[in-house]
Image (cartoon, rainbow, N blue to C red):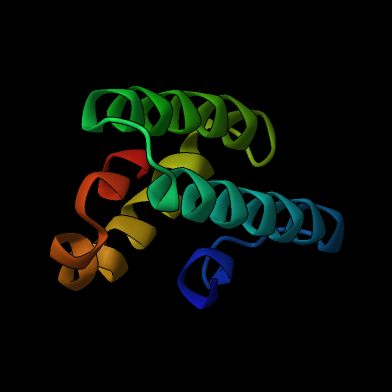
Length: 93
């Protein structure tokens, strides 16, 4: 959650930060549920990609496309060392 809630350098207002934090909490909960269920790898993969698409739409609307790109780059850089541990869940990023 700390990685996802890090908004340094993005100049988000407090409302945007609150919405991002709420979405991050929901996103992580759904990510963990899907990762821990008994679905096949193909079903999990489809679920993670769907989560990524939904999240991209929401985050593009929240701070705008340029800030979304900057935020995404920041998150991807931070989670890079953990991608192997995330397994298929890394697809959601």
